[in-house]
Image (cartoon, rainbow, N blue to C red; front, side, top):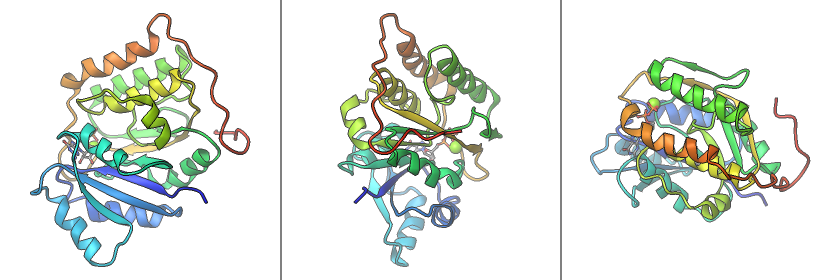
Length: 251
Ligand SMILES: Nc1nc2c(ncn2[C@@H]2O[C@H](COP(=O)(O)OP(=O)(O)O)[C@@H](O)[C@H]2O)c(=O)[nH]1
Ligand SMILES: [Mg+2]
């Protein structure tokens, strides 16, 4: 039987968003899944909201305390460490990801893709709101990696992706700071020949709570993985054969 989907949701005071996020996940994702909500500190205001849902009988929800290192990278890795194999989807806790795409993303995973990207910069995808500089930089990075370097996605930096757990274990993740983790994994997966696909996805900026994204502080770390993709001598091994079925048309 296919491994069920594990959804990893890093949270930092998403108490005002979590109930609506859970409604959206429950109503928009048809495939079976379990969700791991990863928080950093006991006073986080998301924790009581999740406990309440669990107390009301939500068996698909689990709360995990970040056991790697405080911050979003450690939280995501805590989630990764919780499963042995199968597909793992990273979803933001602030309702910014397009959950209507999850079933479609999972179908591509089951067809053998190791990374399935929710893509803001391909036809049909988009961004609503958010800081213009962050958007400009991520768009430039995504499009140049696609058109100049040949990555099979237009959006290497988006966090909203399905990964194969065994691939993650094989890659050795080095990011320690912030969301540059998404770029690192995608670039390494590409250079090592894992199969990558994308589906269009609409990203919306949060309407409640506060972003903790640090453009200037994280930029050098993003740059590291961006340049890693272009470094001289970097070879792309042949894309792996999908695990099952044929290569579907992704657009
Ligand atoms: N556990 C944990 N989650 C975080 C941390 N910083 C951000 N997050 C979560 O990561 C997701 C995206 O964060 P956000 O700050 O909105 O970044 P943005 O969407 O790129 O502006 C949200 O679910 C946040 O709650 C952190 O330090 N620890
Ligand atoms: Mg956000």
